Image 1 (cartoon, helix red, strand yellow):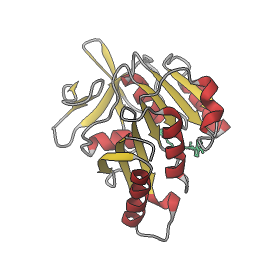
Image 2: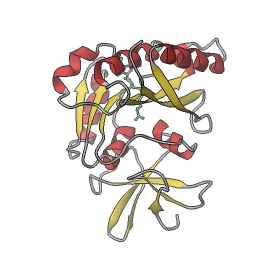
Image 3: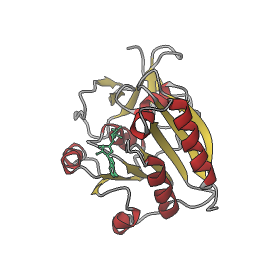
Length: 232
Ligand SMILES: C[S@@+](CC[C@H](N)C(=O)[O-])C[C@H]1O[C@@H](n2cnc3c(N)ncnc32)[C@H](O)[C@@H]1O
């Protein structure tokens, strides 16, 4: 494993091993509890949780050299498609002074999320359909800085745009968007799908700041990092 050190760019993210093939970690906010079978390590009285890039598209993006992840200890994050909390839990380790509104529409996954995050005070699980952003507005009492979306649905770009318009401030709000080409169309070349979805976002007033291929960790996926400029 080697010594664990700070990631050179990202607050709250830690690495070990060679710079071009490192292992990723966050500091475990919920000491001694694991969420998806990840390993725990103690160093100098700090407990680190290994972050598996094959299980988390944000972890994969960091391994694939994302330029920014937009998250820091104070972020207010709206996370769409939280599932049982694999990536949410690492975001919760990073955002120690902020909050994560974690939206998931499968009652079974939400139950696991609630159990997994019971002792993570910065995670608010919400059972809702991300297609209807106004329905969960009563539970969101902060301004949102970043929307993370990983819902794997054919209309995932439209879902993201609706949520951006409802929750992000123009010129300030950021988004992280995992696109799975096979959720949109299995018959079309993934690159054509990615281009089409990027065009939709740009036409809707978004600027793509980084386009990260995570192919090495998850087939036919990219992760876009961008910001909301203005409503067209
Ligand atoms: C690929 S999984 C998410 C994995 C998770 N982001 C992680 O890294 O730990 C996609 C999740 O989105 C949820 N989902 C799909 N459509 C949704 C919708 N319209 N609203 C809310 N959740 C949705 C699914 O139930 C599933 O749990």
